[in-house]
Amino acid sequence: QKEVEQDPGPLSVPEGAIVSLNCTYSNSAFQYFMWYRQYSRKGPELLMYTYSSGNKEDGRFTAQVDKSSKYISLFIRDSQPSDSATYLCAMRTQGGKLIFGQGTELSVKP
Amino acid sequence: DARVTQTPRHKVTEMGQEVTMRCQPILGHNTVFWYRQTMMQGLELLAYFRNRAPLDDSGMPKDRFSAEMPDATLATLKIQPSEPRDSAVYFCASTAGSDTQYFGPGTRLTVL
Image 1 (cartoon, each protein chain N blue to C red):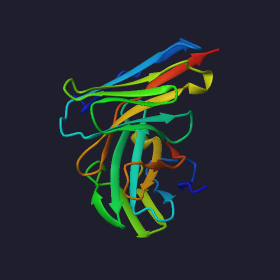
Image 2 (spheres, rainbow over the protein chains, first blue to last red; image 1 turned 30 degrees about the horizontal axis):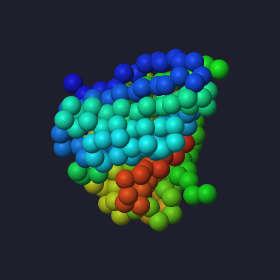
Image 3 (cartoon, one colour; image 1 turned 135 degrees about the horizontal axis):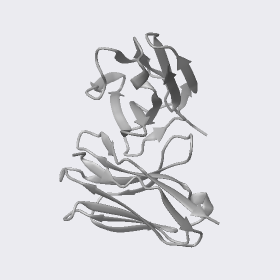
Image 4 (cartoon, chains in turn cyan, green; image 1 turned 60 degrees about the vertical axis):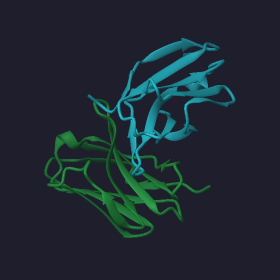
């Protein structure tokens, strides 16, 4: 079993929909939780970064962490075609390594 | 606009050939990572360096892969001999010690 599990999708939604992306993890030592966005044929770029349990909001994006359930989520409100990309969750170990989920491919249709 | 650069962007080679990929981290970044991305396995860490010293290469097949940082502006990843299963996109990322890793555009490797 992988340390970080993420449904690879693909996920297709109409423009304006609320999108929910999720990851589960097994290592309780993970302290930092991130979401990266990767457009086709590009490198991943950091989208959101959280440390503690709870919610963090940035514009249309909300990252949620539930350490007790070992579950993190990314919500996208009012989704746009430009949000079409692969979203990867990542967890940082104490040694500084990032462990990535498989990535969820999202397509937002106009 | 500081960016991580990688060369070559695409490489097609035949099984058994040596492949060298290069990465120029963002100036001033002291930690460099090498990742491999495939459809099946996703994004996997191969090795990383801090202040040019290798810290962890446990994700790398030791018999054919090697990673080095000859100086602060250049990281290399070599595969010798290459095999078809090495076909993937190889990413380099760098950071200045914060938790934000900046990724390069990747090298798309195809081994025939």
